[in-house]
Each structure stands twice: as structure tokens, then as C-alpha cells.
Image 1: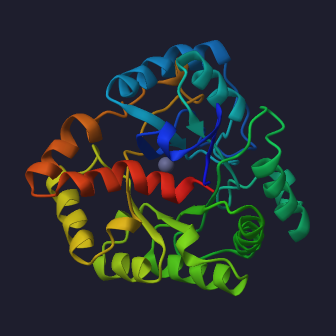
Image 2: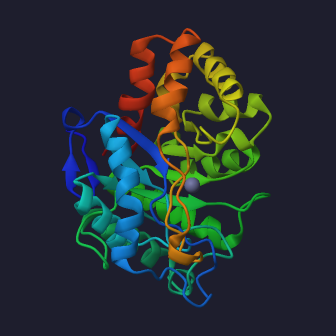
Length: 304
Ligand SMILES: [Zn+2]
């Protein structure tokens, strides 16, 4: 039976409801060589972020996916602390962000060591916290993959085959997503276990559909930050094209930022539930489809 691997252990579909597939609890966008990178007081992180989690819990959200990977301040221990304080499961990735955010220890790994490290985090747990990674989060350069990013992607595909974990990549251009799909398929990994994160950044809608036509998941993760009407139009066109089982919706908001005093001011994870879904329903999307998009799709994508 497929399970979602979270801070609070593996969960089955019937233990979950609505899931937010792309949010952040903690992010550090300074590169890992900067002083203070990834550092924060655990009590401060919990104090700032637990109320944001309580808000979505009250709206019926049952889990969220943390999209901060290594290189942009992944702190599985802080995610776990926020999770325990709220009794709310969070799905945390293995993997690495793109250059120049790749940590030196990861850059130094051989192809085999990269693969084994991801498998270890997915099957045994993190060094910094005792629970298993739920997925593999990567990124690619805006204009194409570097040699190192390609090496990490190939290792991720092999780790994904060994574990069943999905790979999601922050990739801005649809053309680069197509290159990534070529690379993972050459490793024997399936395109339907790949998420094109930030699909909306590719403004050529035909390329959004072309990625879905290859079997990959597409993700509109700017809800609450872009015009609702514009996103609703995109969603309707995806639904008309028949890709209702490959679409993910999220805010890409949050988060405690250690570069800011006190972690800054988080942006809530509530717009989808409170404003956007009622508008999407009013636009004619039926209840079963809304449930598919917000409950089943995130589970189907991330569970293994
Ligand atoms: Zn993000």
C-alpha cells in the first residue's frame, strides 16, 4: 500500500485529506558558503511557524510538502520540531538545489555516493533528524543543466528507481524540463514519477501541456501570489486537455528566513482553501475534480 513518508512517520491515503504539495517552513536562499547559512534557534522557528500550521489545520489541511532541499537551508530537524509542536505531518526531501547552491560535501560525492546518500535518506532517515525523506527535490539552471546538475539528476533517477520516490525539480523553462525527462528516461526512470515544479514560469502554455503529455506532473504553485483568474484559466485549459490526474496546486509560501531578523514575516498557506478553491468551484470545476486536485493528486505524486 502506498505511503506518504512524513516527519510523523508513514501515512496512508485514508489517514490524510487535503495536502499542500509545495510550501516552505524554513528556507535560506543565501548560498551555503555564507556565514550563518541555515542557522536558527529552534524555539524561534517553532514560535513563528507553528501558528501558520495551526491556521491550515483549522481549514482541514492534513499535511504539507516542504520544498527546501539541501543548498537552500534544508533543516529536517526544524521541520520535525514544528511538526511535533503542531501534530501536523510534513514531507521533507532529499536531493540538492542547483548551482551555485550545491553544498561542497555533495559536489565532492561520486555518482555512486550521490545515489547511495539519497537512498539512505529515503530509507533510513536523515542524519539531523530520525525520520525518512519523502521525495527527491532538485533544481536546474534556467537555461539548461550544468554537468554537476546532470550528475545529481542521474543519481536521483537511480535512487528513485531503488525506492519508488518521486523527483521534483525547480525548473523554469519547459525546454529544460524536456531535457531532464530525456535524462531520467535514459536511466530507466519513468516520466510519470517526475514533477515539473513552477510550471507556470514557462509562459508557452503548449510546453506546459507537452510536459504533461510525456506523463510528468505539472505544478501551478503561485496561488495567492498571481491573479486568481489567470491561474483558473490555466487550470481549466489543463483539465480540458485531460490532465486532471497530473496537476498539483500550491502557494510556494511560508517561511522562517534566517537571513532576516527573527525569521521575517511568513506569508500564510491559506489562500487556496479560503479564496481560491471557492472561486475555482464557481468557475464550474466540479467537487470530484477539486478533491482529485487537492487530496488525491498530492498523495499519488508523493506516496511510494
Ligand atoms: Zn518553493
